Image (cartoon, rainbow, N blue to C red; front, side, top):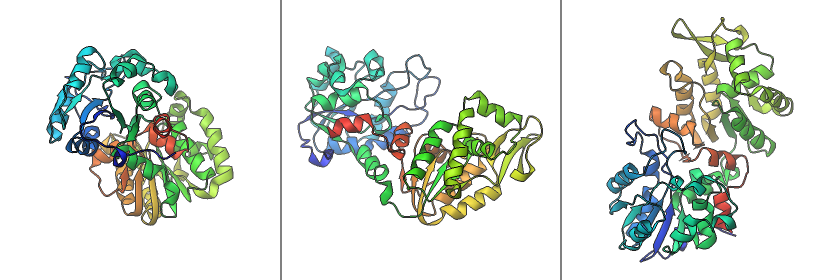
Length: 399
């Protein structure tokens, strides 16, 4: 069954529950440190308000017990600045006061309801039918006419605000959700050859992407970077030194070395590993050819080297598709930012380029790199799509 979009929704005078993902980094005082996720949803919210909708915004911030588990007042204030229509704030999610705030909306007005995760059941996962019977969905659903899900970044969760409402109400995909599904759900339609860059420190996730796209024939080549590359180098018998090997072991990734060895045995002609790496030596960046490893005692691999960047760049630029999933090194440290920055800048020269969200998108924002055809708003959700897994919130909209 096809998913309904805003093109299928009669908006004028309709009260809409709109789930977005504006979970953002915060400063110590609780103010927004980065409004990128809010800006991503401006098109959806603006369209609904311009078409005369009455919009109740649902979103979360942080995790229970975490430092960034805060209220959504600063998010509401920023949305009020970003939108050409009024956006208020209610410090409750489904109480009588919250429902009254929704019922009092005029056409073309919005209210941001309180952090959905302040409600304990929202941080639990349920089948859609059970989620539809939670207090949040039953009480708030009574003052809504329809539901719009624009929170692709949270779409892999089966939480009440994501799967309960479309079980009770007519559900529609917002523009962010629609765009993500169009691109990530149809990777096989992108230009060939397809080159995937898999890296970062979340090794099992990146390994799952690499294995899936190789197995399904979606990848003509997989370029390994970051800790993922270290795992493949260890699988090839390269001595990375105790510091890098211990990191892999301490993170519980030791079994991933066997997985990498199996992948090299089956798909070795399509997997590339670094030719050189960068370590910190006497406070400076020092590049070493892989053939010159191990490094000196205490030195850890922090980035790919310039020879690897050049070789990988030749694969990425020009005809075909470049798909990025994970940074190439410790990009937060300027000493080791070159691999990630240079590689990602080169990827914009591909015929078609896709960024898989999460830390990859954060690196792109940090460096101010532009020119990608699609930058995903989701980390875990993008990962699930790239590995062919279903997204709970998307299936709820579909069904």
